[in-house]
Length: 342
Ligand code: ATP
Ligand code: MG
Image 1 (cartoon, rainbow, N blue to C red):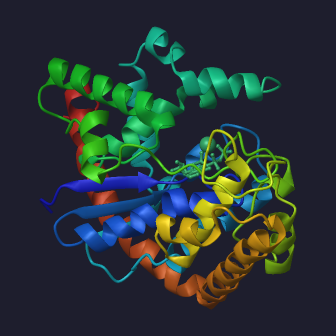
Image 2 (cartoon, rainbow, N blue to C red; image 1 turned 180 degrees about the vertical axis):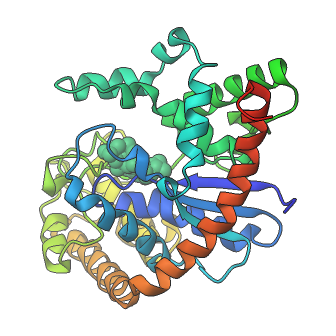
């Protein structure tokens, strides 16, 4: 197994939105189509990361399986022999390595993590050690598999850099134990993206659509009833200018809908703009967008419902057994040099 490893995962803390689908699921599937054969793709569900902020624990196991189902419904090919799909907690080496790495990570550097500062103020009623420490577990997630490419959003750049710092520090002390993943600039070059897609909230288009938002009208869930989703689009916040224009500054609501329409219908943005820009009937425009959303959800949910737990769990178990071997090899190298194993 000498192919360079691309590693990616999405937390299953809440039901994913259409924004997660467009911004995260589709790019991974494109990567699989583009790179399969040349690279190994590790698509894992970071279930241990899912409850560093409060969740409904009775839903976690189900959500973890559903997370993989969403990827399959979106087009991930499970039969690709160089793609591995696994659950983090099914490979205990993740937590074991994280514990070792904790002792080579400094409070000072962890205290600088923006995500921790932001999330701890959001959930100030229960700021856990898990929330503080999760970047170290994330470092273990990456280093166990010798991953070179870890395509992450901007919010995760700092965590990728701390992974590189921890790995380099460990290697300097103990020799060549870990593969240091590429820096964030190279990661962006690799996925050929300079600005990420940002779908906006339907109720406040100055903000992004977020799965954890408590405002249900702001987001379209992948499991929303299509007719309920239609209503959300029809009542989406726009503006009082009265003429359709593609302009994020002055008409973010309308522009967000123009963007969604283009991506969902598989048409070029210019083409969609040509059809709608200059028109004044917001109602007709929203109906067209809503129709496309309904079509998308209906089709997606049909695919989702056709995926059985059996097929899924079979793939997970094969991947988990193969990946546990790789992870255990890396863990053993680390255990040896720190003196835990002969
Ligand atoms: P949360 O509110 O829990 O942070 P989220 O919707 O922001 O949820 P994340 O779990 O943080 O989702 O991110 C999952 C993936 O979805 C990431 O790759 C992220 O870049 C992508 N993503 C999140 N929101 C958007 C958005 N509005 N537009 C495009 N991509 C998005
Ligand atoms: Mg987020």
